[in-house]
Image (cartoon, rainbow, N blue to C red):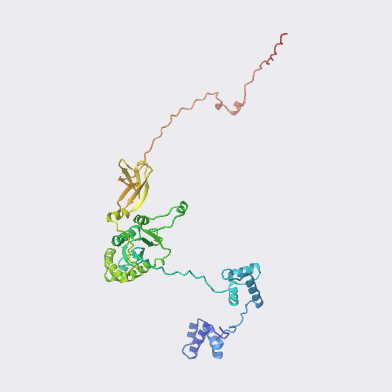
Length: 439
């Protein structure tokens, strides 16, 4: 920038006052446009009439500031920076740190921003910012069923016609094949339902790509880290029994395929539901069959490899036994277990021992199954909480305390106990002299 350059504010003043000169604006309007009072506008107008645009330029524009540090001080500071605080990019001091050391060690007080300008002008500092690491877009998996992304999208899918809901969405990474279903919340059972729909249609996928929600995969607590335990969610147990690996994404961008799929549904699906005048999510789930068929026909692409990596489809009975919640419970001494505020009495001659561990399997419809070491146990629910058996302790026979006589020491005062009876004079004991030995 040269010494004759004007600031943006000064150029704005020239533009407005030129309009005043051409009688396009009144001076009162010019004052409002410039954000100054009327008296200041009159002063500016007077300078403009007498000297033109140059008169509006600051008198010290391009010159040295009256508050600038002496040139000798500047050279001294830059010389110290070169000697002590300069170097390669990874070793040199930044302006803020260099200003601190100049003040503490060298006794030269200079503001960090002033030092930054000096160092930039002298080539001792650059505005090189730390760049984020280059992230290359992840390539699609080659096989259908090798990796399926699973996520839930909360949105007002029915707009004002219904409440907010979650679209459980599964997208194959290789082909973009999509399967979705509406649910109230993103829960374990919602994830299990959409997974079952996928398995019944395509087979068991090799891996699922999810986020770090407790429904899918959670981080270990401090206690689990100390004990070396790997935390597993209920949905994770279901996937483990199916042989499905769960991979947790580090960020929403990592599972961008399903995230972009959400955006497509939030645009196209919402409008189609509006045209169909669907007002509840039961009918919306019925409409999804036709919608997803059209969506997959439009957006699905062929996988890079021909082989299908989906596993064999389990039978309906096998899926019923696999897609269940698993809870471990302790058997009490009277062979009763407690589960979610309910009590169950184990039945039969062969059951888990007292204080043993049993597994309670809970299906989505609420039905329960109790097993011990893989064997099914019979049980009966107890409607009321069993009363605790109280064992009466045998009381000891209390014997009456002995009656003390009037002359017992416990009945005498301290003064009476101090008086001792007179000791009768006893004759002195005679020493026995041994008899002299016979001659």
